[in-house]
Length: 490
Image (cartoon, rainbow, N blue to C red; front, side, top):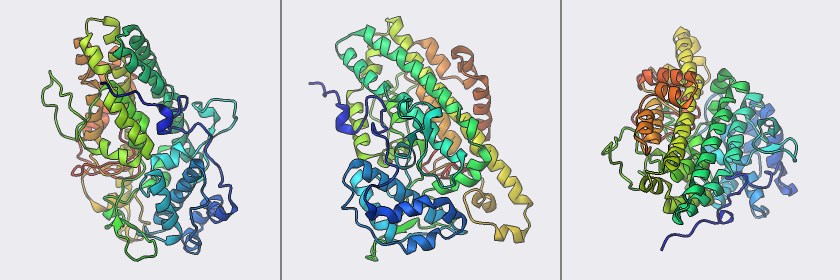
């Protein structure tokens, strides 16, 4: 008997907004009891600028979470406490490795309730940290979105989060549509499957256009030096001043040090949904496909991408697991490869998803690789005295260490990972011509599927480093030796 199709409401998934909540995230906790937290957030940037945030947080009372009555309130509490915890850790001249009980105790309780780790995850900074400017206008329009909280108060930081919010909203309707495609495949309704695949490919193209709007209002210099350091996790951060990770002090004296990846777009459930529904499989970085002509249809490997599910809200994580148990589009198209409309629709989805990953490589090149090289060059020009008095943060730490590892947000090999994820996207292609194009470089895909040539050029520039240059990633550190990663993985 085939597994049942999921009911979206069972997994906190919206048929309209996808993994964004249907209701607008709260901009304030309604109970006055939580005003101490709200007061800190209301004065957030000023406290960070004045370097008084740690003293204020140390003096906060340890508040109980019993008065959080709705899921929206729990989400608001999680977002607030995640922002405060990261500002506490990274908001001084040196990182703090112990988070005080005033934040740790309620934060850990919120994490347990929402099934999330104590870190500023994608859910905390994006999914639950937005509001529409006008209620009657759509949430997938960047012209109608604002953030509740930022570390810096800058337009650049808001824009960085809101591009992801708009992508989530634009992708939302794809979820019920592709569940319908799965149902149609079960009843051998190829016309419906073709229609869904065509709509999916068009929506992926729109999402790629949204991603390219990142450049409009998020300056790479501001992002790299001002925003990214606050998003860092605690995994593989010894060079940044956290050799053991961080400890969330609950007052018992028994809490161990823990290490978590920083906030990451790989924690977006919608990106993993795209892969699951199309049958795209990702292997641990560096692991090759067993047989290029007969790809394995086994379950997904437990590498970085799979690990990122631990950073998703519990219901969303279980939804992806349910989807894996029913995904049949790849098998259906393979079994009906003589249906030209079906194979073309499926291969078009793969082409658009690979195009999206090409555009992401371009973004990573501009926001990380180029800025890191500039930082390394500047670091070499500093006098020994300047170097020793320079503030410790992620923008300059690795430049001083002299390592030659290309590192990214939470600890995986940056360019090898992105290249492999992109290339794996084309592996399931059905048509031999499409498979040849999708398994060749970005330039040939661009010529055949209309991908912007600049994406191909930037992708090749990034690949040219081939892991030889060390780079600090969007929210942490990448290592060619590690199998975990961070914010720039798609």
